[in-house]
Image 1: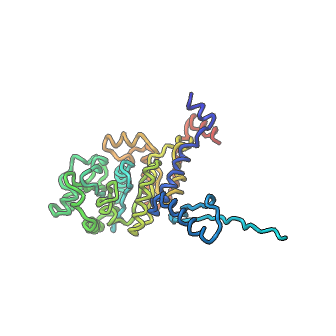
Image 2 (image 1 turned 60 degrees about the vertical axis):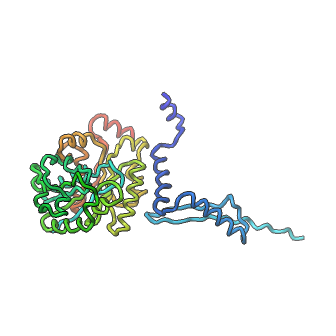
Image 3 (image 1 turned 120 degrees about the vertical axis):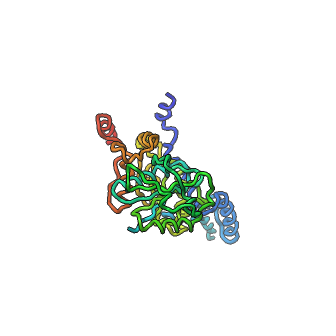
Length: 89
Length: 264
């Protein structure tokens, strides 16, 4: 009965979807031999270096591993803060 | 004759390597090809029982490598499939008794007399795996639709590419079509997208595998077995024949038709 209700409300994504998402994550790190925690460290360091010269929003920075076929890629998305213009006059 | 050497491996244990090796070898032999299969899982011999040849072993792989017998003496001929031979693993030795170059030498000696040589690799990525992969012309990676098995398959595929033995050929074993349909099991498409390799077989989870293995009969000899048919298809694809992937779900009969109507 509980199972039926769960399905009725559709509480969780299907387990196959979860399995696939978890595998994607694990395989990217297995293949690159870069542990997941290293990406977080890298992110902090990148933010620090860039912030020295450019005004960025640290919370908006995204550093991700992605894959194309069996090729791994490190993707950094670093939005710049809009330049504050002074009103003339 | 110049045999092609096919190694069956998986990374994770228990996904069906030995069953696949036994049935691919048997399917090839049944189609009239001369086949020898080698159990490279030293210390954990199992290909003999999968083929029902366990009561006829005298010599083994280590005896051959260490020169205690000639290759011919270690080969057991299957009485049901006279073109099929088995070289069993040693049961009382460890993996270090055989080296990758021993395996290459052995296969080179066998090549002239056979059409196909199948090697059943042990689980893991250590010596036994390297022994099995060293002489291979093609490597079949077998996996199940579960997280740990797919992850380990990916590791193995990476190692095969690093050894320049790729591209690996993938068999997905023990698929439960009903669970896939309900979204509770990884689909063939999911796994292919994750692993990005070439598919050579998809085998349904099928009771007939257990029943035939209990009896020591390769399931390809059971004309009614879907898994048996799937393994036969893999053998045909290895031989270069184009065979469409079969429909895994049973759609015959009243229930099957009803299911199909509901789905569409």
